[in-house]
Length: 259
Ligand SMILES: Nc1ncnc2c1ncn2[C@@H]1O[C@H](COP(=O)(O)OP(=O)(O)OP(=O)(O)O)[C@@H](O)[C@H]1O
Image 1 (cartoon, rainbow, N blue to C red):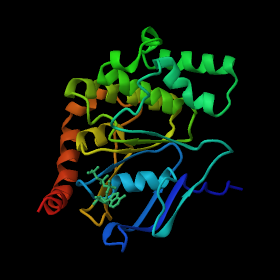
Image 2 (tube, rainbow, N blue to C red):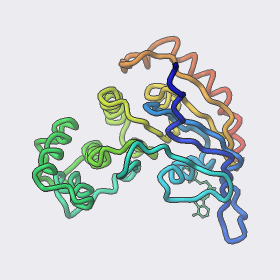
Image 3 (cartoon, rainbow, N blue to C red):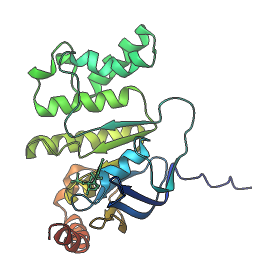
């Protein structure tokens, strides 16, 4: 007999989110979204369409006004970890201390902590900076620390809110390429918010397009490029055609949001 199909890792069902004392800001409206375990899903849409709101609801930091967000956890412990645009690392702690902090908080024994931090620094090319303070780091390095810290707790779901938006174009490209290979190693569920369609198509298994506020889902594209995905796919005709196709749907929403 076939095994029963596994429920989605993340189920967003009929979610509406209102902000303001009287609910006057209608951020999301009737959003349905299912994300399977191991999928890398990118959310794109105009400014203010509720992308961060959706991410925060998946992280259990915000709650829907109506509807529900369900996470299928595989076990106890921290299920999600978040990476933000502004690094959010502690300036008075070294690189190694920043990465190890969530492990200290969750009571991981010191020997295990030291091993895990060393492995993450190795994986993120940070080993030479173990004792550096964040003020000595470039933006790219600081964001590597944020990613390593998020991975330290081995989250089942990695949530990334425009993580590369503050980086210059070259550094952004390098971190995108690194994220492709990091994802390949453990194929964790990722929800990634970005304004860049190119970034979304390069990284994602799916690109979910949201409308101008109130945010609704108006497109869900499966990205056909094989894994392990090579960064060179950026330069192909298929990539450009897909970008054009999705942009032709998004453009009107971006214009509407900026009227
Ligand atoms: N705490 C809050 N109180 C009131 N309004 C809020 C609050 N948080 C967000 N909003 C509003 O809800 C809408 C959605 O915000 P959200 O940050 O989720 O959008 P976004 O798509 O991530 O935007 P951006 O792309 O600009 O980061 C916006 O109009 C925003 O101003």
